[in-house]
Image (cartoon, rainbow, N blue to C red; front, side):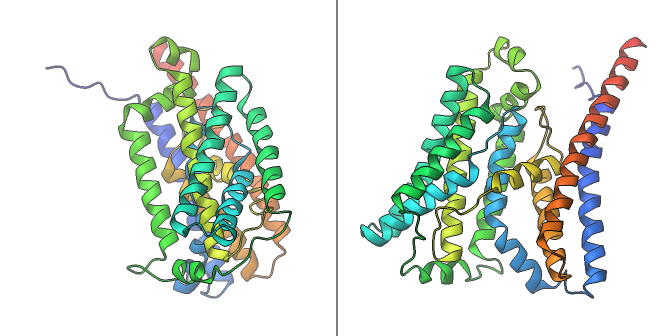
Length: 332
């Protein structure tokens, strides 16, 4: 019986470096801020609050990761979150719809937005960033129209109480993030669908010629991430006990940044859920550390922007080195 061929060492080295670099950065930042804040950074209460506040970002970053791996992009994240949250809040407050049904409708709205973006991308061959840019304007505009540009408030205090009630030591939103991350990881790494995503990102034409229904996979990807956007909007609504039609403005850039910092390539074909969560943790650590040290929030955004450039540059350097190693091995 023939042995399974070993993967090329240069490929293993690239994956190792894509994992170790962001993890090293995260540990370095934690130690730096722990020292500068005299132990406050890693206190249990601070870590719990940081994780709680960043649960919506983690959910949308998990959702956008497979899309980036497939060499696509989505700019409608925050707008879809707002539309789902505002719709759920209005249905519950003004129409007397049971909260469970209103919550489900928020997720369904996100899914529908994702399907529309995916169909526009695949049927018209329009770049995904253009299709989702249109969806961003549509969803945000619709959220503003149905809410009359007003915050959707009401008797939502029970939501905040529920979201703050620990379950086996963790708040419900954190369990939601962990469960979603596990499902997404298994889907990407251990299913035919996951392998198709990586194949499409590496070479869409080759994937299609190999029998993969690329259009169907892409539409499904956008649908799944859209559902997660709706879920993230719902979490935001429950955490704040209100929904603003302007909520989550710019969160799409944070989600993309988290994926890139965590090792995903905007060129497609590589990335992981674990790496994205490390990217979210890096961004959350930066922002929280700056806040604890009374550094203006603008500076944390500057640092994140620099990290994005460094992340993309690092990915290009790794790809160049890996390709050179592959050519060298082929020539031997």
